[in-house]
Length: 175
Image 1 (tube, rainbow, N blue to C red):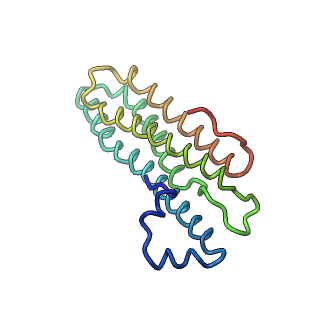
Image 2: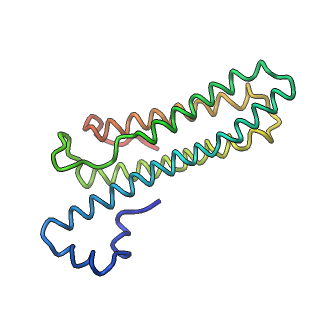
């Protein structure tokens, strides 16, 4: 994940010169945050998206074993996974433009950035668990409900993130 605070050590000579122009420095900082936010959300969505193939493999294994009655559970997990991916790809960006009604301050951006960083471990954990399903000896009735609950918790975090960005939430929830 790109840390906008670390970008200063990697900038070129032209960018360093442009930072001396009044007002341009703040513009660059917002651009770094915009890029970091977009990259983070893209990584989260891509990480969950990669788990879809093992989930499909697991579903095919169940069909081959004649456990067709377990497929609705797989479908519910797939639907939650698709919902989470879509919400991440279309999530409200963690920055505000100059004329936006709700202005997001630097401190709040830092909180949101830390909040998003915490979601990375959540997404990786869920995706890793889904990827292990084809090798699992447990039944779908045991393995799938906790994964659905994890994705629902992630969707709740996305709701809270959007509320924070809209100025509704005041503090990020405990991670």
